[in-house]
Length: 284
Image (cartoon, rainbow, N blue to C red; front, side):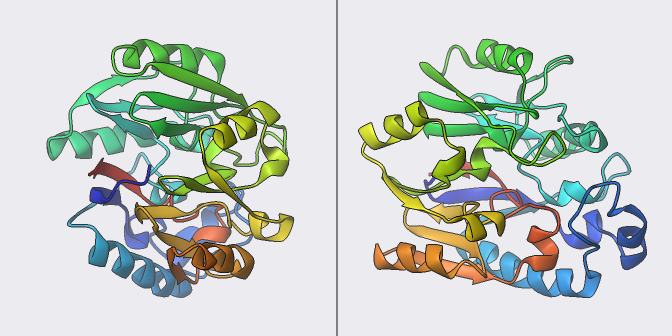
């Protein structure tokens, strides 16, 4: 989760949000926190994209597709990429149920192999799958990822994963809220993670501490503003949404490099932070 990103998949607002008119017509059904301002989205994304292009050698852009909607700007969730190829997910949010088909078609066109798909009634989303190391994966079991999805994921990865840690997710703000395992933890260095412990099961928090991780705590306000959703470009170098000064200071005090972008329209309204906006294809 923190190795230097060598290649990455992102999607521009022009291909996901499309226009102010489209946002006006669809933001409520996607349950956004207000209608994004399209021009401000473009400005915010330009800064975010600049960080990506300056730090990642190969940047791929997901094209517009009629099977997708606003949330397709958050390229992380329809899949997870493993050593043997991509596993695609029919996501728990009905409006995103065909998104993986568009991502699969594009990634296969650039040579990314497919390992498999999670089939209904299985459900899984990329934000619930957290690599602890190459042989260990934690999976959030909540409203977006169910037992059958986890069973199928285990079957597909049994030759490459030694340990699966199933993490029960809380009810949180309800079934319609976007609460993933990666909503409450982001690895930012080989031995550091930003966390929201209030939503973290005790056994998992203790597991991370026993593994030697330093846990950097976000408070309620900064958690609500995506302060636990960071993208590690490489160990100790991260992107964070602007507006979380306490988390930012804690990271800098530990010697990390932190780049921030205005993300109220791009990220906060759709609850998709820097991790959600990206799908790393390869890390070194």
